[in-house]
Length: 87
Image (cartoon, rainbow, N blue to C red; front, side, top):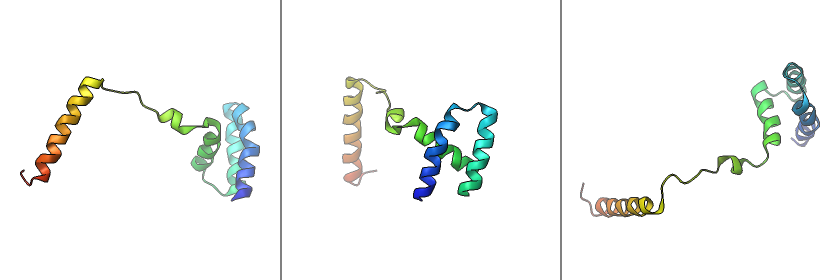
């Protein structure tokens, strides 16, 4: 597994700076070397390119504080309603 990581890190810079036509041949060589499918190879190369995934997935708040308080109150009432056995 460590050897594959070394191969990916060696190919990553070439892949990043390559044009679209060159990327295909780089992917072919990487798939032949590692035995991976093309899609897995692309994801492995892009994972190193992207870096911190958590920063990409961070979401903005959808509701303000007043709406959040109202939704929390409704949610807590619903839990109490279900917990009491009434449906």
